[in-house]
Image (cartoon, rainbow, N blue to C red; front, top):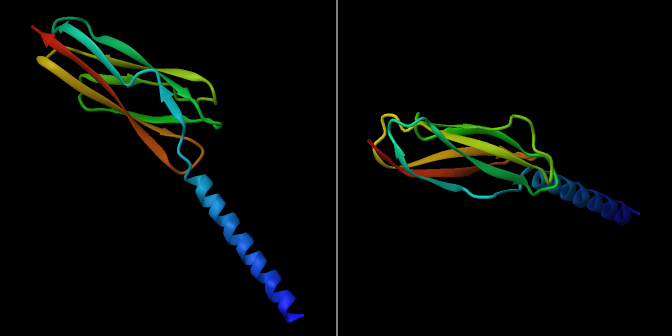
Length: 136
């Protein structure tokens, strides 16, 4: 009788460990997204020109909603606008990136770093790059 009780307890412990491991694994799941492009070249832009902009399209390719938590830029001359609401599976959103050429000279290379999170604990950082040449 003690052997049956021992085996039963051992099986319960293994099942509990397995359930905890699956919970931790599911919590570490990264969001699944894709982009139409992660680089845009503005070409040649006059320093006196109005700010220029482009759009990057992000698609949620996973099975759970994802959200863009932040979009940080490497310079005050660029900024990003993104939707604040979660993106449902299979849906796409546009991230607008604006660049102000005033005060800039020569070749430019700027990054917008998106921080994207799904339902798990982990978030991912995705760099979007803009380049060009600013002339007087």
